[in-house]
Length: 185
Ligand code: IMP
Image (tube, rainbow, N blue to C red; front, side, top):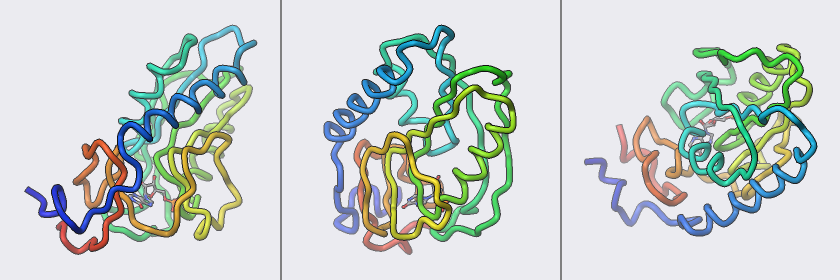
């Protein structure tokens, strides 16, 4: 077992109840903003990090939705962005004329989500909004910000609630700060 899983090197930043309360507030805002659209809202999760957030979020959205996923590579398993984004899995739905909500785990430099938004916008969606659980404003060079943001955080490496360190720790039920990222791998 990873020595970070239960460790004093992991500090809880947002516990499960806090995350879920905040997600419910964001879900309510999303519903209000999309109250007049007739077709289901297309909720697209950016894998893998957003999978856990999305499964909570869609159950909090009190309106019809359809779900899809997209996957890119940017971090290549480390803790620093490579700056190069590669599309690994594309959405399978036809987005023409649809209202889309993209769900991201965290915006760091913003390069990943900029790539994703440009890619999805090119598919003819009627509107594309972005929900990000977390944002690290200090390193964001992309000019892209979430329409719905859970929390802004300092430049820490965080794990849990979908966020990984070298593919581990996604299943922690809280968001924690890694005080020593060398422990895994
Ligand atoms: P960006 O392209 O620099 O904004 O990086 C976004 C992606 O990097 C996110 O979708 C995460 O997968 C990963 N990432 C950025 N910061 C963290 C972090 O603190 N913990 C875990 N993953 C992170």
